[in-house]
Length: 185
Image (cartoon, rainbow, N blue to C red):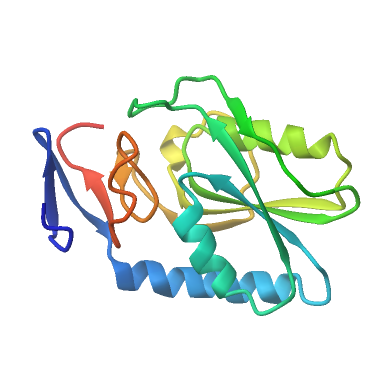
């Protein structure tokens, strides 16, 4: 497979570039600058949601110009499917103390909002000072839960996407651009 192509074929499905590497890099830099400004003088904990956010998380953190801490949660709501199962399972909990701290949840994509709703409730049980959400992608058409997204990289159509951390059956996370499925959802 050519990982630098504008179009990728996987098991009969066709994916085309939705967001190229340059566009993503520019927006991640802007988000890092905004977060650095908003949290200037504070010590936020950035919480990445594994596995999907790992590439966005790493690039975002490298664009943060203030002191910060990092930790990770791991959830499952998809399995190998293209759509959410509707149930969230916590696979890895936090290792840090979040009481009275500023928390920034870092997600790769928000579609239904189920995972964000779950995480905000989970984190809220520990009395943080504040909880904000930054997501690279938001499928506004698919959102079913009333969740506040404080920083959004891109609003995208309600299509299945891969690349830049987003997977299909745990593969294709290493694509530098984000590709959208063209023949279906």
